[in-house]
Picture 1 (spheres, one colour):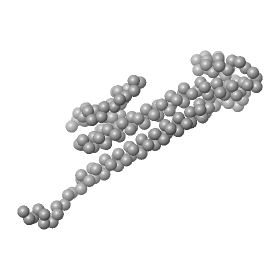
Picture 2 (spheres, rainbow, N blue to C red):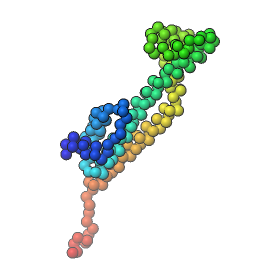
Picture 3 (spheres, one colour):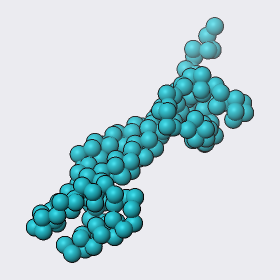
Picture 4 (spheres, rainbow, N blue to C red):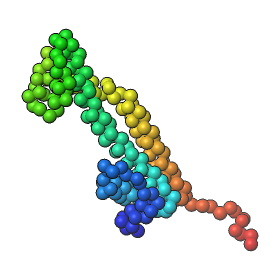
Amino acid sequence: MSRSDQGAQLALIYEPRLLPSESQARFRMMRDAIVAELKPSNAIEQMWVCEIVHGEWEMQRLREFKDLILTSARGPALKNLLSMALTASGAADIDDLAERFFTNKRVRNKAADILRKYGMTEASIDAEAFRHCLVELGEINRRLAELSSRRDKNLQLLEDYRAALARPTHRRQGSDDQG
């Protein structure tokens, strides 16, 4: 069976529901690479391979979500840092600085100067964003660990199944001789 035939057969057994932002072509590329590596030879093996493919795709999705969550938290993180730094000086333009920091070079430089006065850098924004998202990121990391464990278990099941099929079956002595 060719790889494309295997991919088509695999798609019949398990058709994923991708999010609108996800690439069908990227999914197929990943699926086809896993199928080519594991070479399922029957429906049982294809079910395990489908589980592995689904889990790998979810892991990729979650890793991307972690990046997106951190990126989206940078604005509020910057606002928190500027609020801590500027409460003493009574600056009223914290919101404006935080909103325009990512789009306006002059504002970015001004905010960076303020942060520097208080011993902070742009890495401080990332650290604050990380701190802000710690609970969500922890949940994602737990799910990634679950998926990794499930993948490893499915790979072991596949290996055990293949090993069992490869073992020669011995006839019971006498059972085939009497007849």
